[in-house]
Length: 103
Image (cartoon, rainbow, N blue to C red; front, side, top):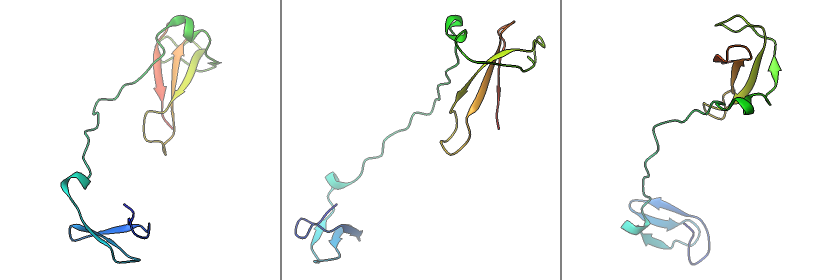
């Protein structure tokens, strides 16, 4: 919060807000308290399900672990934190098996 007198940033101290610049003091009321929100715990993972949409994806030469075909569609998804690398998904062009690779 900012001081209504001098517009300087106020600091929290012993249940009150105090301006470092002019000394203005304001008691923290229950309406000033921050409210904790609940985070969603379930994570959604989107994988390409539509075969027509999969046909527009780029292909790569890689071996399918299920049928050993040598070509697969691929795409990237950010599943973990933003500072971690993306996950590469592959779908075999022959049998449709989908797998992923992490860095």
